[in-house]
Amino acid sequence: MAYKLITKCTIAAGVFLSLWTVGANQAQAVVLVNGSTQGYYNSSLGDLYPGNPADPRAAYFRGPNVSTGDPTLSFPTAPDLTGVTRLGSWLSNPTTAVTNGFWTGLQAIPATWAVNSETAIIYEVDGGSNGVSNLIGNFGVDNGIFVWVNGQYKFGATAPGGAFAFEYPNINLGSLNPGKNFIQILRADHGGGTGFVTSITGDYIPKPVPEPTTTLSVLLLGAFGVGSTLKRKQEQKI
Image 1 (cartoon, rainbow, N blue to C red):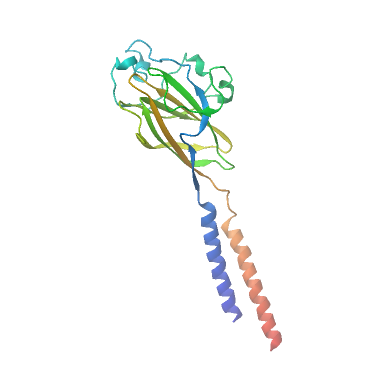
Image 2: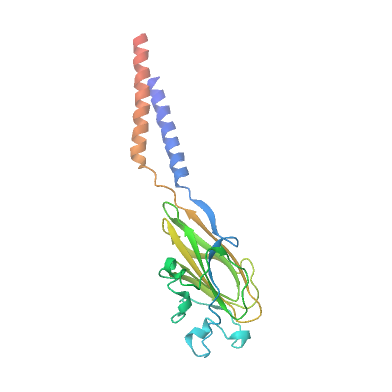
């Protein structure tokens, strides 16, 4: 009888450990950025079109009023922002950049802005105690967008038409570190209207669980202890 009890306790311990481990390792998916998320905002950049259509930056920032076309393009490399001094160190040191006088404090980010101009956003995002995995962005913009995470370029594109949810879906943005992180976005317009829709989600990484072998050993020892105690009680009755 004691043997059967030990067997049952061992099975129960194994089932409990399996369920507990699975539960502990489940990620917690959350919305990190959306239309109501506050960020630091810079609307002082003006038109970043370089004036010469042969300039490499002209592919990223088209001429005003659709004067150099309205193509659909994706950008595997980041635009060269050398000389855009009003951005400051927004990619390498956002905390310092936002004090240069051209950035606002934390505020609601407007969904529209001045036609034929560019604007920049810095979202400060908490990565929690263990960081965030599976960082996914969904964007809609009129006309162009460029995205960095902690200063690392992740995505860029431009297209004609308005902003809709979501023009650019399921963009892999990588992951976030534990604690403070920054998501930097540059929006571009070259005529017509402006618009912006965003949703960025991620999975908070749970706290590591104890080694299964250690925990299972403790549970098994407890099960054998219960079985031994019952066996002794039965022998005393005899």
